[in-house]
Length: 347
Image (cartoon, rainbow, N blue to C red; front, side):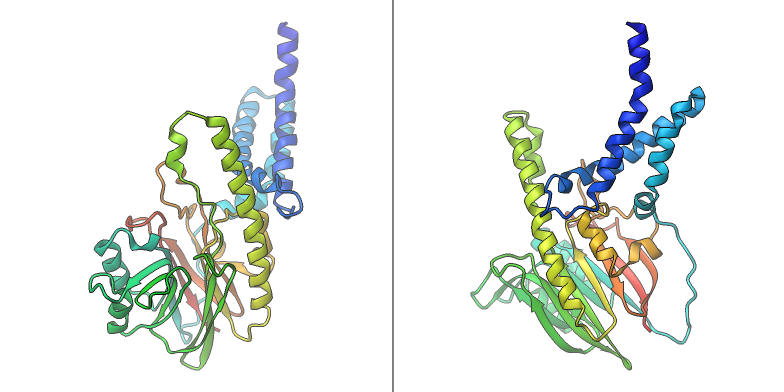
C-alpha cells in the first residue's frame, strides 16, 4: 500500500504536466472548431501556479521529478509574460504629442451621480465608454449634454432604445475634432458592438475603435446557492462556450475592418476575454497590447469580490504608436469594471 502511494506521488508531477500542456494548447484552438478549448483556457493560470508550487516543493525535497514542473514553467513563459507586466522606460520623443485614452464599461451608469461625476471630471482627452446611458429629458442623467458643455465632441451608438431621448450602448468622447465616424455592428439588437472615430490631432489622424464584445451574461450571485448546482455548472459551461464562439466571429469582423484602416489605430474596450484565450492571441498576432508593453502588475480590470483576478479590458494598438504608460484605475469603484488608461505617443 505504501509502495503504491509512493508511486502515485511520483506520477503526480507528470500528470500535472500533461494536463498543463493540454490547457496551454487550448489557446491555439479556435473555439468554433473545438468548443472545450474555450473552457480549458481558464485552467492555464491555475496550472502555472500549481506547477510553480510543485517546482519549489520538489526542489526542497531534491527529487528528479522536478523536471516535469520545470518543463511546464518553461513552456508556459509566453503565458507568464502576458500575466504580469513591469514598468519600463521607453524612449520618448519630446517633440511628439502624448495623448491619454481612457476606456470604461460604465454598467449603464447605474451608480448614478457618482459615476457621472467621475466621467465628467476625468481628464483624459479621449474617453471610450461601454454600457453608456444618457437621457436628454433628465438633467441629472443627460451625460451627453454635460460632456458637450465641457468641450468634448461625441459619437454615440444606441441599439437598445429608439424613443429619441434615451441612449444606451457605446459612446466615444474626444477633445480633438472628429473627422470621421462609423459603426461595426455585431448584433443590431445588442449593446455588444463596435464604433470607430477618426480624430484630427495636429497634423496626424488617429482612429479609435471602441469595442464591447459579447458578454457571457453570468450572474455570479446565482452560484452562491448550492441548490441544483450540477444544472448551474452546465449552464455556466454553456455560457462560456457560446460567448467564446461569438467573440471569435466578432474579432474576425474587427480584423477585416481594421485591415482597411489607413491610419494608426487604438482598439480599446471591454473584450470579455482573458489574456490566455485564442481570441486574445488572435488579436495579439496583429496588434500590440498596451498592458504588455507599458503596464504594471497584473492589470486586473474586473471588479468582483470573488473573481477579482480577471483582465478582460484591453488596449491594442497598431501603427507607429508608442505606449508610454498603461494603468488600471482601481480607485474608481462605481462600476463592475475598473477604468483602463493608456498614454500614447503619436508617430
